[in-house]
Length: 451
Image (cartoon, rainbow, N blue to C red; front, top):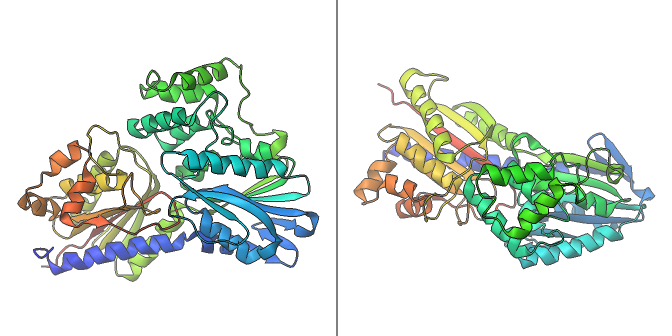
């Protein structure tokens, strides 16, 4: 870092501060407290009011990386009115709670702890009666943490299928489409287990478009997908023949109408079901934009729904940053370009990394030699792929510094080894577990030198 211009060092610090502002805006505990309030015996969530005196018991159930602080907020609001409950969270993302049991499990690949936690959660759900209120908490990671293999499937079957889906470049919507039809709990089936209890789902969105049936694979909402669509995903990415035989047999049986479909809109199990999204990627981007403007940048949110291959998206956005330098379009310097969403990585090499790190590596290569341009991309959950980094940061001098250190950016990108590349340069973005998750935030800062 010693060879960099002081201005670049300031811009790097600015980028990290803008990212932190995005995280603060989607703090799960604060999100619950902003949207949920208790007025006497009335629990109010938006336009919905529930008279607590009508319920004998209140349960808290759920799964996701942000569930522990969400549950803590409910304990602050309701105290010992909560009869009990259980949430499944990613290992290392738990908190000490009083009324609600916290169960840690593996993510992104499910494990036996997730299976056992989900079994216990389903037991509680099936105990709920018509005079019970279930507060269901869902956030990013819920799909991998809520694990109940359908009849005839093993955990290993689901692990193998998940690995293949994560490696092939499928979108999170497509991955969840498959997961729902291999599960006893996803795709509205938790609502089926809770019925006839009243279910209020409080949700932190980690999917593009904030589609309720896609977040954590929609355990308490009507499912809009079918068995044939799940099969089509596996065929589309040419992994149909690679998934376990039991998976193929189940999907084939479902396509032939031999298995019960996931519950759809109009199903009686949703008669007493309500849903509320408490936070999203767009909220994070808006907060980042405000913070950037306070720091003297002109800020522009391009999209909260960015998807596609990480390296290709990065090159396209880097081109916009370079256009600002060349012509002052779409906005003059100093500028802050903001995007959010969830890109994908098609694994071709054997390296270590994640979509945010690969995004920054591809952007750094596109920005080689461009002065006073900084790029940062980070996962709001604090983890990027199977690494301890949220993402990475780079600028127009990154590739030059790498080559001087004997590193070939092209070779690292080819090998999907972005983690090793940025680790060698000291440019990984390390936040630790944030206990939130609203997908990714991409930041480009441009400050054209005067004179």
